[in-house]
Image (cartoon, rainbow, N blue to C red):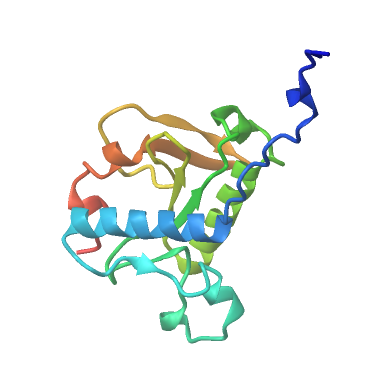
Length: 174
C-alpha cells in the first residue's frame, strides 16, 4: 500500500533566532564611535559605561557626569544617543506621541537639557544607512533633510553621511 500524504505541514516551524538586543546596541554604539573617531581624527569617542544611564544612576560632580550613549571629546557640542533595531519605526511615527521613536527623542531632549548641550540621536535600522535627528538648527548640512516637531520639540533629520560632511566648527567649540 502506497499512501501519498504530505506530512511536512505537521512539522513545527523553525523558531526565529533570538537577538541579543544589548549586544546589538553595543555593536552599533561601537560602530558609530569608530565612524566619529575617523571623521574627527581622534580616539575620544567611545561607549559610555552603563549604556548612557551613568549620569542618572551615579552621584557625580557636574563636570564628571556623562550623558548619552557615547563619551565625546571635551569641546564637542552634542550628546549622542544611539539606537539600533527598531526596524518597524517609520517617519510617520514622529507624529505619534506614544511611539518608540517619540519616546527616544524625548529622552535625548531631557538629557540634552540636563547637559546644556544639543543632541544627536542616531538611529540604525537593518539594511538602511544611519539617520540622525537633532535639535540644532544652526547646522548647515547639504543633502536632504526633514524638519518637524515631535512632542512639541523642534527637530531636524539628516542622513549620518550628510551630517558628517558639515564643517568642524558646527561640531566643536573653539
